[in-house]
Length: 66
View 1 (cartoon, rainbow, N blue to C red):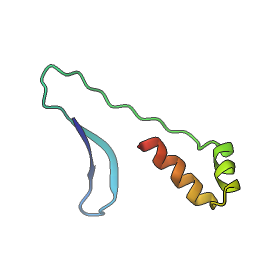
View 2: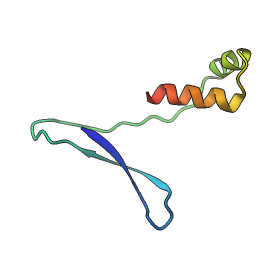
View 3: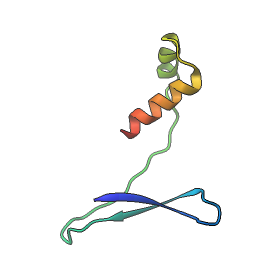
View 4: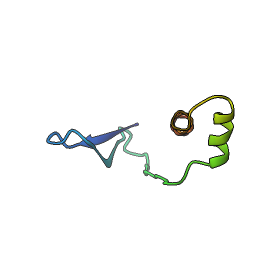
């Protein structure tokens, strides 16, 4: 299974239309997404270790996606 994000060629900006392709005809697959805020405490913890706020947020978000 893989997920691809369709984008508009005219603007070259990604659009949030997930396309899920499954090659197994017996599989039942869904797509789920969540929107929320990054925990301020997590940001502060990383900033206390010397990171800038933007870098801290990037690390937290990338960690959620990994």
